[in-house]
Image (cartoon, rainbow, N blue to C red):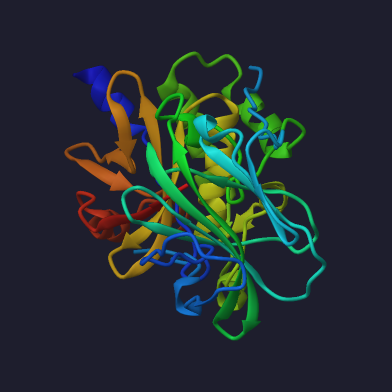
Length: 324
């Protein structure tokens, strides 16, 4: 019981900014025909902003082209669905906004921005096994988008952790990333999950500060640059969560970046998997009497004040909406 409590105590929650979480729509459609016009609600592109309320194991995504949906505008490479991701790139030069919609078997639809430079972006299949509808869209004007390519794919994951061990658009790192090197430094000599998570967690809450200027200026479509955030040691909750998720994943620790609500605040945090206890949701803090939910962004901002612990309470104010 003591070990279990200790593991739970080290769980790990992180925040995102109230704003662009890369936008997430809810009602998905079936695969759209090329040229078909749809409307994408810009209001769904919120960024989580809430300021309050040892060798690495880097698994590198690839696009081998063995299973693709391709036309003149976009290619959707779903060769590695078993590993929990797809890769998409736009083939035609454009200055228009690009969007990717991924609807999983639960019916939850994830909305992302897609880069305009012709490079692949990685998108997680975080909704488990089943059929996914994937669409690529180019802006016509405002919230009006034209379908560039879409397909339906059947996904059987090699294991439930596959999407939460690899880089993706929001948790974007590779073997040369500074966050990977820092993670290796932080966990050196540590052998238990609890100690590794604790070391990364304590580093972030002790050294990072909340970027209020970015929170005020952030635009929809914002995606964390984890190495830049690490260098500045400053960011919004989305940045905190992405950096910590990247560090832990690089050490082979299954980590979910979660976007949802902490009370009224649109927020981001992380869940960590323990072989002894399963998924540990959010961070649990022992105040000498009770176990309290602790979110790393809130923790670094509030310095674990009594007001902070009262706000966080027993975790019931946290409502997950999306997993990455």
